[in-house]
Image 1: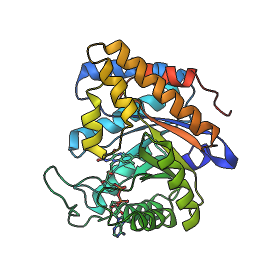
Image 2: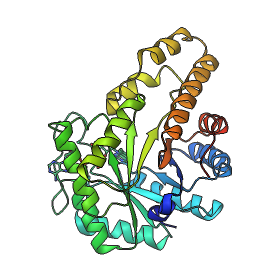
Image 3: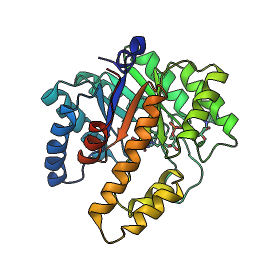
Image 4: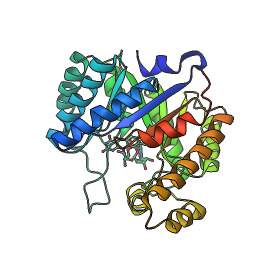
Length: 290
Ligand code: FAD
């Protein structure tokens, strides 16, 4: 099944995002958590794509394993970082041969310390070019792209970012998965602005339950998402109590999810960070529309 089919005719799409573990122990732990996540009944599972060659092979290993063991549709993330078009085509062909029918097509981030993204020789500058390339060379692939309710940090303005998102949609994206966010108002405003500019494909909120105070700095520095003061305060109140922090995070994410569902979202995409418990708890406390 492709990503496009996952949301077809108003169907609700539930998806989980993994990352490639660095160690054999991480791989074993992931299998255990994927078992639990598969039992929740996702529409598809994705795996991120890093800058290094070995993690890219791991991406394919992770998703082809999920596909085979759980008979679930899967998607590989793919970025424009460090690969010419012909190398991207090789990767896509390998993915296709392994039964992968979906791509989350991204530009990728500039290397650490750099503020600008430099396209590789023979490669692409922006995700819309990658979407065009995939549509031309692998027309049957389902394609998701990233969207930014709080605006991408390198965009000159929210409107310019939205126009750039529209380019990805016009290039053939099937669905938008958003960057994680914690203020639903940002998502609702974003959805309205997408509607105004003529974006008609499903827009799926990306959620990451914060279950440890130590995650706060990382989330803020990696993607710039703002965390509500009340959530930060509640996590800090349980500074020496990991179980208490977990409960605070799950409770917040449950309320956030319930409000999004009540507002009729097309689906939910959980950044599960290779763990299952928080997402299982959240989904066990809400009513999914299917
Ligand atoms: P683009 O859509 O190309 O946008 C990048 C910037 O350029 C934006 O500011 C945009 O406004 C601007 N822009 C876009 N098109 C144009 C244009 N034609 N002309 C001028 N300006 C333009 N990163 C990874 O490395 N691996 C992953 O697996 C990964 N998975 C992700 C999954 C999701 C759901 C999301 C939301 C992000 C993910 N990222 C991942 C992070 C992503 O690579 C970064 O956010 C990156 O900085 C932007 O990627 P993009 O595809 O949104 O870029």
